[in-house]
Image (cartoon, rainbow, N blue to C red; front, side):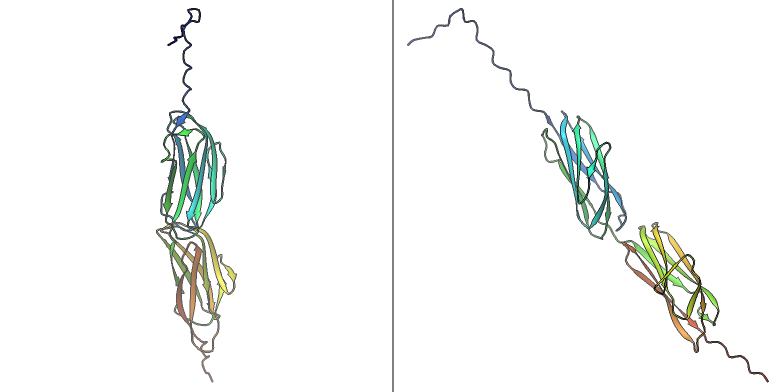
Amino acid sequence: MVMAIRSPMMGPPPPPPPPPPPAPRTDIAVDVRAPSGPHTVGQPGTWEIEVVNNGPQTAAAVNLSARRSGARADTLGAEVAQTGCRTGTAINCSLGDLAAGERRVIEVRLRPQEAERLTLSGEVTTSTTDTIAENNSDEDSIRPRLATVNVDVDTGERRLDPGEPTSVVTEIRTNGRPARDVSVCVRLPDVLTISRRGGARLRNGQACWQVDRVAANSTRRFRLRVRALGVSRARRVTVTAVVRGSGIRTRRARATVVVLPAQAPPVTG
């Protein structure tokens, strides 16, 4: 066997190269929070999506994507401080770099258009190695309801002589939820004519009021002043009030009144 003999002139062997530095690692997480209730069709609500970097290192090029599903809804906007978001059915926000412990909260405004379950889901990504993938997505849901609005109509008098005036009062009451874009219309029979419309607009034989919003558990009244016309014989007629609106189940109320004929003048002579 031939053995290599190292010359004393060659010196000690070189040290091994140092190991490469570890790749940056971090843990980003997302939390989706629905607005507090009650939730009503047509009423906008603000959702919060919180993105946090749990560390230990900076998360680079963080991006949030969110999407709504379920009930039809309008996206009214998404906001995050110093960062713009592209909105639509899908929402995308470029959050840039997040230092360890840093968090961003994105506010998303949605307006549900039907009484079905509405879900907002969010997913966050980063170009840095993420050590825990399970918390990179989250979602929350609401189930909006139709606003309940009751309506009553009262003609005041039950029997009217020709030319006699009376008031027609329509009252609406919201129950538990606010109502928006409320339309209240009163249809009068042809033997009653309006002498004072109380701010109503006259259209298609109806007197109508439009209200942008009625708070929950509140009452609004709408008043018409009317006068009976002459009739040849007594007539029982109906006054009909209808309330409609965005996210409101249509309700009707009716009241009856008897319009009397003119009394014959007394016979003299």
